[in-house]
Length: 106
Image 1 (spheres, rainbow, N blue to C red):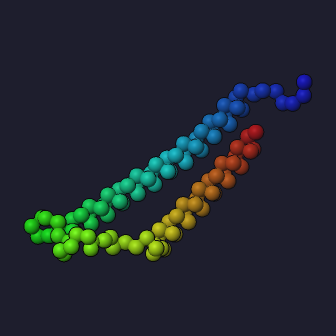
Image 2: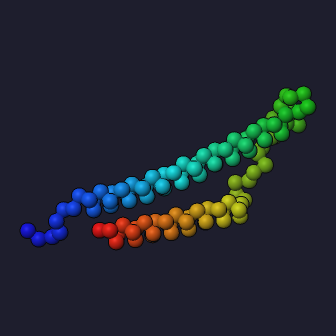
Image 3: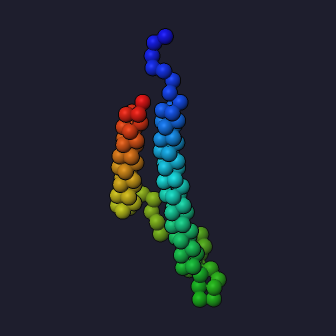
């Protein structure tokens, strides 16, 4: 019979490393989604508060149909783009590092 003998300790270490990497990725995704949800809630609450008049009633200047968001989906936010690029770079570096570590163990 040719090949390397089955080593349960090496397999366990390899699986631990894989799972740790996946859990780190899930944690990063969860944290980004949580911060996004907090940011959206803050934006929504500030828009809601800004739309109220002195009496506390919503006041859009007369015609409620004419009210629209101040954000324009076509306009790119450079800070958001830099943040996303930074996140992608970090994720790729981590992926390469973990892949390299795992390749050495096998």
